[in-house]
Length: 254
Length: 291
Image 1 (spheres, each protein chain N blue to C red):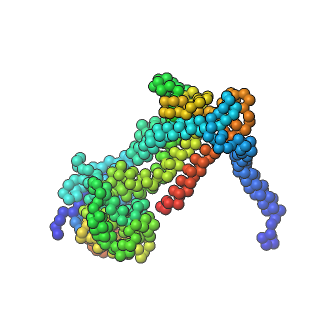
Image 2: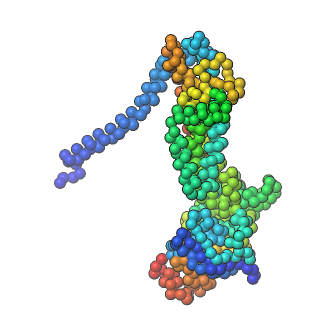
Image 3: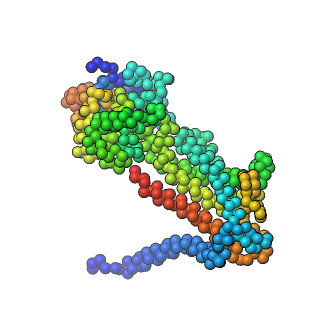
C-alpha cells in the first residue's frame, strides 16, 4: 500500500518571462485520484503537462525543479521522452482517437513501442483487456474495425483511456476529460475513473468543483501558479484551511 | 405609418440591391467565358485533325503533315522524369518543414526561398537550366536536363501544397501519438501521411499539368525542334507537345491550320485530364475525412 507515488520538488515553470508555476512541491499518493482545481490561468493544466514533459514543445518554456515518478527524476538529463510517455499517459479535453479502427487505436501504443509484428494472440488479448478495462468491450466487441472517429464522444473518450492501458502506465493525466461530454456520459466516465483508481495513479484537472468532489480522493487548489492547499477532498471542501480556498469553493470568485 | 408596405426609399434600396447582385453575378459569369471560348475554338478548328493516325504517327514533310506521336511521348518523358525528381524531394522537404522544423530564422529563410523560387519566371528557370544542367553538369541538351529544369520550377509549389496538406491534419492526432510515446517518424508514418496523402497527391498532380504545358524551360535544355526517333533514354533529346505547338505555329511556313489547333487540343486534353484526376482525388479525400 505504501508504494511511492509521484513527487514534485520546487517545480517552477516560465513561459518566456511569465512564471506559470511557482515552486510547486507535491506528493501525489499512489493509486489515488488527485483532483487539480483552481480558476482559469492558475497553472493547473500547465502543471499536469509537466508530468509527461509535453509542455516542452512550446517555444520559450523553461522548467526548474524535479518531478519524481517511480523514484526517478523525469527532468534528469538521461530521460528518454519515449519511455516517459509510455509510463505517463494523457487524456485530453477533447477526445482525440486516431483516425484508425477501434482495435488499432488500442494497439497503437504496443505497435509503436514494439519491434516487428505483434502475435495474433497478443493482439486479441490486449484489445479485449483494454476495452474491458474501460467498460467498452460489450459495446464494441463486434465493431472493432469501426473507425474510432465515427464513435459517439463518450465512447471516443473511453477509448482514449483504453489506448493508454496496454502500455501499463504508472500515472494517468486527465485534462478536463468530461468537458466535451453530456451529463449522463460524464457520470459514466467518472465511474470509470473511480474504477481505475488503485491500479493507476490518476491526476485530473477539472473546472467542475462538484466533479472534483465526486471523483477525487485528494484535491489540490491552485492559484496564480502556487499550490494553496492540498488535502483529502472531503476536508478541503468541508473545512478548507485557507481563506482563498474557502472563497473559491463557495463560488465567490473564479 | 401604415403597416409594413414598401416606401419610396425602400423601393430605391431594393433596386440598388438587385443591381449589385446582378453586377457581381455577371462578373463571375465572365470567368467562364474565356475557358468556353478557348475550348470551343480548339474543338471547332482542331477536331477535324484528330484521328488515331494523327495521334500515333510522326510529323511528315517538314511538319506540315502527319501526326504528333513523338511530341506526346516526349511530353510523357519530361513530365515523368521531372516528377520522379521533384515529388520525393518536395514531399520530404514539406514533411521536414511541417513536422520537424521549429520556427527559427533558418526556417524563415527557407520559406522565403520557396516563395521567391515560385515567383521566378519560367524563362529564367530555362537559362538556369542551360547553365547548371546542360553546361556545368555537362548533361547536354537532353530529357534529363529539361526534366531537372522543370523539377526546379515545380518544386516550390509542390512543397507549399504538400505542407498545406500536412498542416490540415489536426494537431490532436499528433498529440495523441506523442502521448503514447510515438516518435515523430512513427507519428508521420502511421497517422500524418495516411491522412494527408490525397491532398499531397492533388498538389503534385496539379504540377504535372503545369510541367506538361510549359515551353520556355525545356526549349533550350532538351526539347527538340524535330526528331525522327523517340528518346531511348534520359540522355536523348525529345520533342514535346508544347514545344511542337510553338514550332509549327510560328517557325514553320505553310502548316495547315488544323494541325496546330489539333495539337493544342491534345495538349489541353492532357492537362484537363490530369486536373480532373486531381479533383477526383480531392473529392475522395473529403468523403473519407470525418474529423
